[in-house]
Amino acid sequence: METKEIIQNYWDYRSETYNTSVVEQSEEEKMLLTNILSSTMSNRNGLKVLDVGTGPGVLALIAAELGNNVTAVDLSEKMIEKARENALMRTLDIDFMQGDAEKLDFPDAHFDVVMNKYLLWTLPEPTKALMEWKRVLKDGGTIIAIDGDWHNEGLLSRTIRCINNAIKMLKKTKYTRVYNKHYDPLKSDLPLFSLKPERVIQHFKEAGFENVSVERMDKLFSSSRKSRKLLDVLNCSSPVYVIKALK
Ligand SMILES: C[S@@+](CC[C@H](N)C(=O)[O-])C[C@H]1O[C@@H](n2cnc3c(N)ncnc32)[C@H](O)[C@@H]1O
Image (cartoon, rainbow, N blue to C red; front, side, top):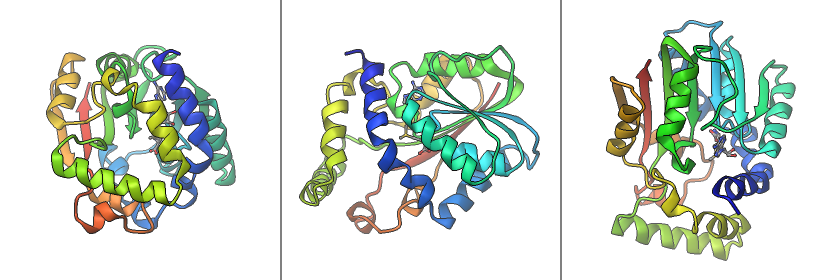
């Protein structure tokens, strides 16, 4: 099976459980994301915004609530169904469609903002994706990419992750097993699977972005979880970054 097909199958499978990231989103996380988006957009609205790898629509819903014209794509048709339901429940008008972040079906210079959250790590060709995002951005447009180093290979992180995974296994978290089955064979094909800021900057530069800013924002990830997990308790959560660049 091709890499993209495996990724698509996994996220189709995860769509039901992953939808909790919208349904059970904490006020704190929503506020943090709203602030990141509105400050990046300089508090303007009515912008043409694209959310790539939207999942159940986490960023797309917030950008639409801020009064923007939002389009959102995801590889997984089932995620798109969830995102549509979430928008409908909030009476938000968002254009959702199935699509590949590395090969977008939009004209050049079409969007003011291209954004994504927790997507970079699972892209087989991040530079190609960034070139696509640059192509569809208007001159002066902005990219906002939010992602973390979920698979840090440092010894301490590895050990703690193992303990954490073991606990999840004991709790019979089925998706951890399914996740490993899908992603273990793909790791080496995903350049940002262990996401380091310097590597992300390199991909942005290769795609032609000059001024790239990276801000560490771990609070974002811990605030998205209702219960504090072992990693948080031990203060070893994965680092999360907000990366921005202008076309
Ligand atoms: C970890 S989820 C993140 C979802 C959402 N952005 C969020 O903030 O929670 C990753 C999402 O990226 C999607 N995805 C993975 N590869 C993709 C690609 N090449 N093009 C578009 N979407 C992709 C998956 O289907 C999944 O919905």
